[in-house]
Image 1 (spheres, rainbow, N blue to C red):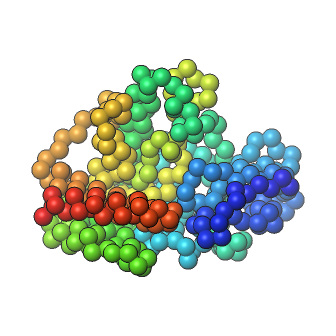
Image 2 (cartoon, one colour):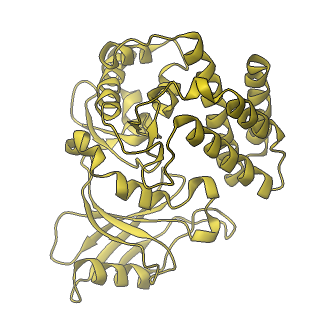
Length: 328
């Protein structure tokens, strides 16, 4: 087998599996006679370990994604791969853009980790292709993102919180639980989580503003440029695929990472709203947006720590302080 892994520090968060593990995965997913002839680890993602694999007798590759071992996962990011798997029926509205799940295994009998095999999406990652286009064509890309987000946000769920659970009866309870889980993870790392706990307390004290959200809408959790594929031959940016939606949850669309990114700058991304639709921000919605920003920054703090980005971790404290200055 042609086996290629990305060289990584032994202490890095992402860790490879062995060639033997991949052969065992191939046999479990495709039958006892299956043989993997090629397994190439792909970069770009920062959470799961991903391989493009080819099986003997097959011309089309498939994608193998292997979750981090359970002890490496933050409580606030518990079993994200299982959450993505549970989200597939709800994401049917964008099913034409998403990879198909071919096999999933939560037994952890192979490598002690969850894994999933998906169909291979054609195209090239948007971060590798978008910059090749003239910037006057970029609004078309962001308009497509707006249309995709609108389709997802139109889906309703049975509870508030992560798609796979735990579910909450109100949006306020889900937000406070999420903030608390992130703060607990930060504390377990030996970092100061007092700022995030203060936001959680404020959110709890004013949960009536959060509970104005009564419909649990499906949120992508992580959709932006890095999660899209583009047609490599089109004269203008055309989204051909959407992937890695493992942070899906039910709640307020304004709490989605996609909305945060769409509002981050006044540039080509303003075309997002042409297809998504206008926002009507009440004082309560503006207040909720501050709570959501603290939640996003808390998750960023965890990710930057995972990537050993000390300066980036430090910067998050200034960002949360700015939020608290407006909340209090």
